[in-house]
Image (cartoon, rainbow, N blue to C red; front, side, top):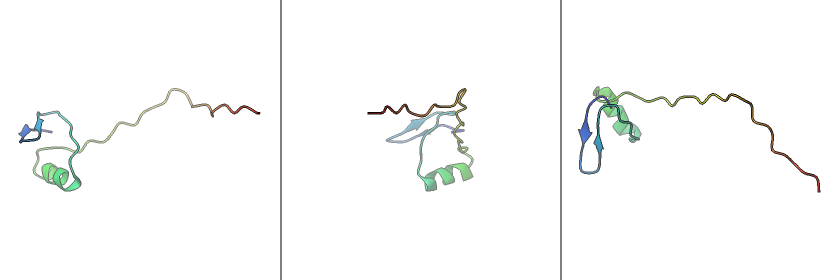
Length: 56
């Protein structure tokens, strides 16, 4: 959020993140009240090993 937003069920300050419906988020972004948030890609330091399989 770029601005404060409050109502009966929500209270957000500038810098807060919240999941809105697609239509509501688009309206807030278009009005200049919010910016879209792109999740950061998690970088792995090592590759995961395949799960160990034991023979019976």
